Length: 405
Ligand SMILES: C[S@@+](CC[C@H](N)C(=O)[O-])C[C@H]1O[C@@H](n2cnc3c(N)ncnc32)[C@H](O)[C@@H]1O
Image (cartoon, rainbow, N blue to C red; front, top):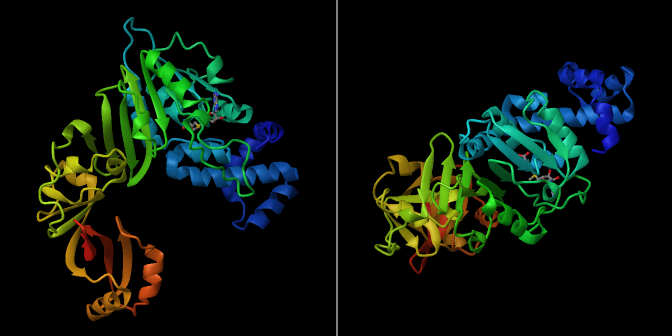
């Protein structure tokens, strides 16, 4: 969105029309011509329809708040989901020694999702964004929160000495290089993040408390030893790794947080000294650990609480004879193993057909196959559903016929 379009969008009559957009007909073309007949220019009409679409998409991340917000496509793609933003706020916002309001800086606030949560916890938020339109959109989204002003400036130009906590969510996608569908490319070099990771970590180490949100593929070698690195999944999707420093660091080291219907926290101190016992001996159940636990390198920490063993030292599946229960069960998806089948497609097909299986979900770890290709090659007639898992038991390549528990 360019600054001119945003200025037009911020007109009271235009915003009012956006709030009532659902009274228009369903078809996009009809909606567009209805808005043009009401006197809106072609640019404003397009902006209204885009905002309506982005609000609908944003509902998944921001719930009912989305209906009262404005977005840029990039800003929405990078915004923190509200339950996760609330978690950041719980980790960062504390008491001040002098009883004054807690002050936090959001240094690259995007459309303002994290700032909404910080301000919601009663903090005084200073939000900044280097992009003019994004900063203006964030200011609009935070308009009901008087303690959360937004400045259009670079994080590197802010005096950071006076805050109780700093929050960084560096841009990790190319800016302004959107293709026609509005998508951007992921940046892999941490020094090309904006601001750069080394600058961010430098500031975070010196702060009273700090949090740094990064992509879950972060190289473990980049986690500073004074930080707690927490990989987070929400409703089964790995969304981030967050580095916490100073007062926000509860326990240095790697940690995984599974958020969803149930919550689980795993820390690297929970790893056993050896996870080699019983490796590759198949039990009644196959366990697929949550992605946050896998990314954090903490799969073996689930062995003791689930009475499980690894299928292979390097493969992130576990196996056990006991149906998972207790808190650690939140960290896995369990499958009952009904058979071990041959891997060659013709024999595999024959075995599946003889068992009345007609539709398969194909999963793999440690196996050189392409799940979609296998499904197509099997050409199964109609029948029951099953999950096929291509993996290894020790050195042996196997296909496990399973059913989700
Ligand atoms: C990942 S997004 C932040 C998303 C935000 N936490 C949210 O939940 O909505 C990163 C933002 O940083 C901004 N940015 C990039 N470089 C910056 C810099 N040097 N200083 C301040 N902001 C910057 C980008 O414009 C972008 O909006």
